[in-house]
Structure formats: structure tokens, C-alpha cells
Image 1 (cartoon, helix red, strand yellow):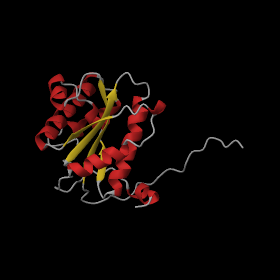
Image 2 (cartoon, rainbow, N blue to C red; image 1 turned 60 degrees about the vertical axis):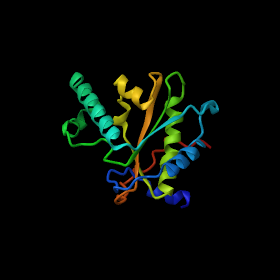
Image 3 (cartoon, helix red, strand yellow; image 1 turned 90 degrees about the horizontal axis):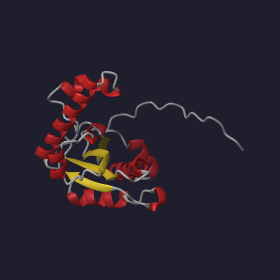
Image 4 (cartoon, rainbow, N blue to C red; image 1 turned 180 degrees about the vertical axis):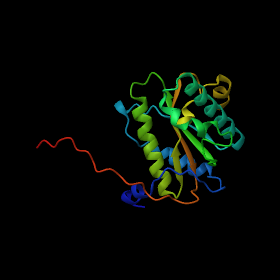
Length: 188
């Protein structure tokens, strides 16, 4: 696939085939995603791959509950618009994707969010080029239970930046209309 085709075909996928993604494929995508630029060439990203269905269910439940508590504590929270969806016990934050790749790094890295976001973009483009779909699931940044984090191998000093659901799409939805670029000024 050419880059313009990848850009045209990348979508947030929320409906996956019941088909596993091989660890060889995931490792290949991860390896190539590390070609992303990073501030000062720090390359701070660390990856966690979870394809165990029971563990994905546990993470989904933990994060749903954490967001419900967060909204209850602050009714003005922007996540309030998702409250009903999150309260639905059958809602799975990963849309039952067969795998989730978490991109994270040490909290003391100044440009962590930008660096990990760039790696996540590369990851999503690479996945698209291989016929896979992704969805950045920000709900999954809310893993706070120390026991669960320990089980996953996420030390307290790591911040989850980009949880990416990964799998084979049942279908690729149409592109949503895009706004015209807002160029503030061109100075020649």
C-alpha cells in the first residue's frame, strides 16, 4: 500500500473478526513503529501486548469502573458524555479486539506524550498496511489498580499513553467528513 492509500484507509475500528493476530505480526509492527521520531532521539516508548481474552476483560472492567467513579466525583468531567455507555456492563472498551498494544513510558520524560503518540501513529499506519484495524482507546489509560498493573508488568513510574486495540476489521467504515484545513496565515 502506498502512504496515501494507508492514510485514506486508516480508521478507528470498533468491530473485529474473531481471528487472532499473530505475535510475529505484532512484533514486526512494533519494531517498525520505533522508527518514529522522538524529541532528542530519546525513543522512550515501551510496549505491552495483551491478547489474553480474560485479561482484556479484566482491564476493560477496571477502566470502565475507574471512569464511572471519576465522572461521579466530577459531574463536569468531559467524559460525562460516555457515562451511559460505560455503565452498560456489556460494553467492552476494546470492542472485543483480539489484541491490545499499550504504548507507554517513564513519567519523567518531558516529551513522553508527543513521542509515544508519534510511535502510536506509526503503529496504526503499519497495522493498516497489513490489513489490520486499530482503535486508540483512551479509556484504557485508567489502569490504576496496583495489583493489575503489577500483573501486567507496568511499574508505577510508567504512564500509559496509547492503548491500541488491534485486530482484523469486520468492515472498514466510510471516512467521516473532514473539515477544511484552518491555516491561520502564510508568511512568505
